[in-house]
Structure formats: C-alpha cells, structure tokens
Amino acid sequence: MAEPSETMQGLIEQLQAASSRDEAFRRLFDLYSPRLYHFFSRRGFSHSDCLDLTQETFLGIYKGIGAFRRDASFETWLFTIATNAYRKRLRSGVAEKRGAPEVPLEGGQEDGGPMETLAATDVPAPGEELLRRERSLVLRQAIDRLPEQMRKCLVLRVDHEMKYKEIAVVLRLSPETVKVHLFHARRRLREELGPYFESSTAGIVEGAP
Amino acid sequence: MNHPEPETLAAYHAGELPAGEEQRLQDHLLACRECAALLLDLDGLADPGFGAGSLSTADQEALWGRIQGEMKKEEAPPALAPVIPLRRPPGFAVKPRWLQALAAALLVATVSLSAWVASLRHELAERTQPQVNPPMYTLFSGTARSSRPEVSIAADAPIFDLILEPSRARSTNRYRVEVTRAGGEMVWSRGGIAPDPRGLVRLELTRSLLGPGQYRIRLFEETGNQREPILDYELRVKGP
Image (cartoon, rainbow over all chains, first blue to last red; front, side, top):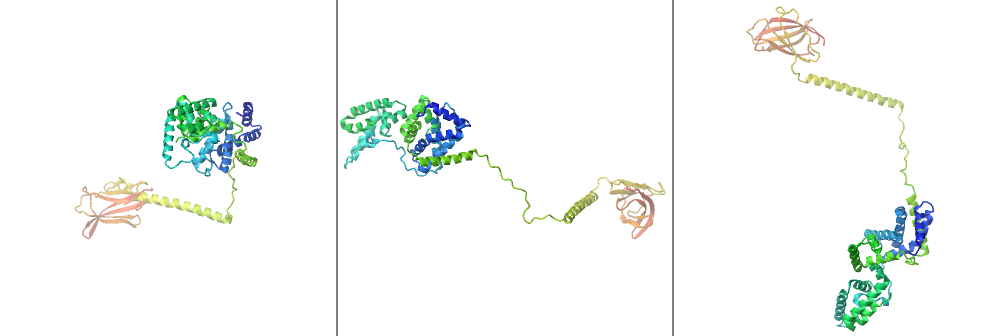
C-alpha cells in the first residue's frame, strides 16, 4: 500500500460524507486514474477504450462509495469494479480491436523464453527440427516429475515468462522461496538430463529476480 | 475456460480461500495467462508506480472533465414530464348559443322519441304475448237467469272468453253471433260457430274490441243459408 492507510481512510471518510466530497474524489482520481488506465492498457484495449473504462470505473466508485466498508481494501474493491467493467466491455463486443499483447509482462533476455525455445539452437539446421522437438518433450517430462511447488515455479518462469517477484505473487510465496525452488529445479534437471541441456536451462532458471 | 470472478481472485490474493479452492485456482493460474496477469495487476493497483506516466496530463484533465459532467448528470434531479397546457386546436371556435340550444332540444326530442317507441314496443309485446288461462264469463239467457248480465273485464286481461248458454238443446250444430252497441252499431259478428260437446257456444274476444259500455249479443241458429234468432243477451262491460 503506497499511501498511508490513515490517508486512504480519511479520503474514504470524506467521500462518504457530504462535505468536501468533490475535493476528495478529485484526489482519488489523481491517485488512481493512471493506475486504472494502465490496468486497462495491459488488457490490450485501445487508448480510447482505456479512457472510457477508466471513466466507467470512477463513476462506479462515485455511485457505490456510500456502501463501501472502510475496513475493506480499497484496491480490491477498485480491482473488482475495473475487472467487471472490462469483462462487460468484452462481452458487449464494443471494444476496439485489442492491439497490445495479452500479457505484456516486462522482461528481457535474462528472463528466458517460452518452453519451445528452451532446447532450440538459434536457427535449426535441416534435420535438427525433430531433435529440437524431442528435447522439448524430454524437458517437459522432466519438469512434470518435479515436486509440485518447484514445478509450478518453473512453469510460471518458463511458460509465463514471469520474474521471481511475479511468481511469488501468483503462488503466494516469498520471492526468496521462489528463488530457492528455481535453483533446486535447475539442479535436478541438470542431474537428470545431463549437460546436454545445461546451456538452455541455465538461462531460464537464473533469470533476473 | 471459466475464469474466476474478480472477488475470488481478490480472496485468493488475500489468502482467504479454503485450501482445496486455493489449489484449484492455482492450477487455473498456471494454465491461464490472463488470470495470472490479472492477479499481478491486483497487486500492482496498490503501487503508486503502477502505470506512472502512462496517462498524459492533458488526457487526465480531459477525463476528469468527462467524469465531472457525468457526476452532475447523476446528481441532477430527474426531469419532470413537461406540462402541456390545455389548448384548443387551431381553427376551433366556440359555437353560438342558439346552436347549442338547438342541439339540446334535439337531444331531448331524441330521448323522448326513444322512450315512446320503447313504450309502444312494450304494449305490442303484451298484446301479442299468448295469455295463459284467459278469464271466462258465462252469459245465460236473459229470461232464464238475469235480465242484464254484467261483466267487468279485468284491465290486465286483453283476451277473455264469453260462454253463451242456449236456453234449450238445439238440433243444429252451427250458430251465428252478432255483437252490437246500444245504438245498433255492429261491433263484431261471426257465423258457422260449432257448439262444444255440452251445447255451449264459446267466444274468444279481446278487450280492444269490447270497450266499456252497453252491448247486445244476439245468437242465431244457422241452417243452410237460413238463420233464426234464438236468444238475446244484454252485456255491460265495465271500465278498465
């Protein structure tokens, strides 16, 4: 929580009170409109749709603020309204064509690549495509044999291209635990598969935190 | 793929789901990039750096203006339906008084005429309606029983029977009856009347034929073209 809880509680109290409601709502808008816009942008909506959905979400807040429980998480409430808004927009089919990638998670070379590229060389030479697929299959089978938490961490790291911190959020683990799981996963794969996959797997599990 | 509701994702994020449901949701997150990204953004919404710089100041101000406009619409009292003043259509003119009086008179005349026609219909229906058990009045020979038999015809009996009793048995089987007023004016007559098995002559008359007054009823015996008077009856019909 970036803002001190006292500040958010005070803001909510002002919003729920008749006095200085407009001023409090403006402060809330300044705080959350860029985040909401970004939230919708990451769902692949156009600039115009993102503005519309941000407006719709703020109007939902304005209408429903009276019923909001002050002991609840404001961001959770905001997330619920925003998610319902964008899903409704998708169902109605009025959204412009989604141009952005579905999950534009940040990442670079150190984050590794999808599973299919793990065992691949830069450009498969003629006759090596079959060998690359075989390597992928063997690697997948080896991952499936890993302990559950270790396997989940590796799948999110490889398939979803997530950072340690993101994996930690999704699996509700600490980043340190994720790092340990990935370390042991790399070691097990190396032991099981041998140096044949050493160069490929090392790039995956030793990505940026 | 059925995606979890945002409330379920939020509950998972807060660690409030039961163990079994948490495992199912986690498996879904491993397979669904969209929900996994949503969960990350739920975490990101609490971070002031999330989306920093993604919305320009100009866009932000324009968006605030739009939201303010919608807020004012929400707060404005609901518009009442416009009140349309009662107004006569163009070309409408008040009619003169004499025309209104004429219309009223025509209306009264129409109503009266309708009432009269209804009364006539009622009377016609009464007269044409078959009467059950019409009253019977027996007239004996004036010399034998009464010199002046009087009959008072009930007002509600439009049809009644008169029974004439010849003083003695006759061999004939046909009679003729003539009804005249006191002044000799013929009111009703009929020949070829057959007596009933007891030798009585039965006449069916209507009140409209014999109004109040004094009458003479003459009974004839018919034989071929010959007729012989055999009896006279005096009849007084009382008022209705």
